View: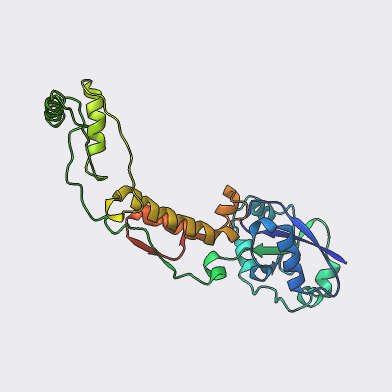
Length: 276
């Protein structure tokens, strides 16, 4: 029985240990690691394991490279280690490491570097496209009233409503609007004017799509896309902590943020933090 110490690349964490038997395969080690880190929710076969050696010598846990790995910082030595061919799942640990390296195992070493799966590769949908634009988003605003209580638009409207209120059978006065044309601001202006009581009621009749307000429809579309992105990313972000998220180079959520900041109606696949 051997004890293998491993570190997860980019996870901002210390080394972990797994017990490995003489007849265990690399796949058994992957399963043991995945069992320890259930919060990541990915299949064990998507893990990649690399030997943490330089010049055929195990990486010491007090080495600068190991310390940087604990802080999620990449180094040239680390990049060189994971640039090699990963350990083959169907080979035994004895075959993969060799007798010389097995004899040199000790507690104050890092033996394995583990890389987490890329969401796009794991889910097999790197080119999945998302439409974040509501179909009527292209409608431009048709009215931009000045946002002051004494603006001509406000005072004129106050006068009209005042004449209506002087009628013997006073009707209920309603300002009907579609989102994006400034009428909500007009309600605030009327309230600030001080001569009228104004109340704002949100109406979003889901059963009648042609009456729905654009802002709510657009919000619904984008919320659905964001939820889908989060679901696709979930197996790769563990508990959802900052360290878990930042350890991923690419995520669908990054693609959503990129699209919202950049303005395209659609985006395809994952994006990196550098993209945003």
